[in-house]
Image (tube, rainbow, N blue to C red; front, side, top):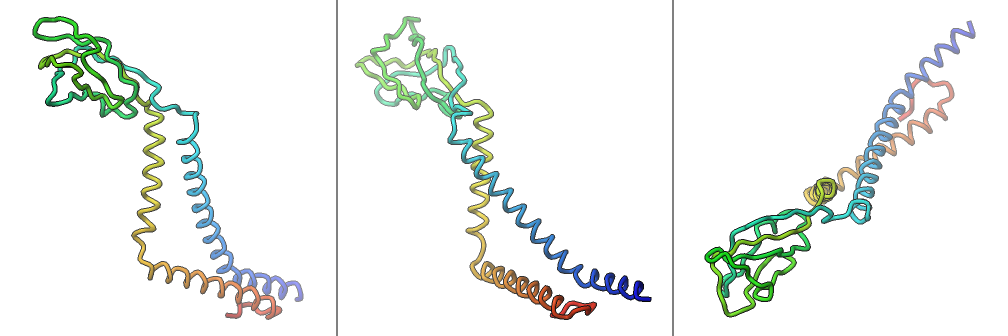
Length: 197
């Protein structure tokens, strides 16, 4: 008879703490997700600042791009918009009207790919052959992920109304108080089958 009573009490106690176990598991899952998100942000930030993925590591060459060299409007190379565009260099420039080469002293090229006239002569139709460097896809992907994560986190917190933040804090405090009362009530009840709230 004693054995059956003790097994019944164990079953009742197990039912009594079921809610507590579920709440603890819920909070453990939430904390795990938050920790995982924090680790991802730290890893992506470290990756973007490290030398593992070097920007502007790939190079390309453009042949006979049409443009001009004049005083009124500087010409911008069409590949300036490629991500990681860097180190442009004019291999040669040819005047399209007479197919003669234009000396490099007659124009200047900025790091942004803008060509300006450095002489009194104006060339309205020029064919440029140039090289430039650009980012690998892995660098662009890492940058995009970090940017999206950062903007998502900042957008989420900026969109939250302070009233909802205060309400969330109050709900967390209420849940913690209930958990403390359940645990302390279960210890003080000594054999009671239901937790004391």
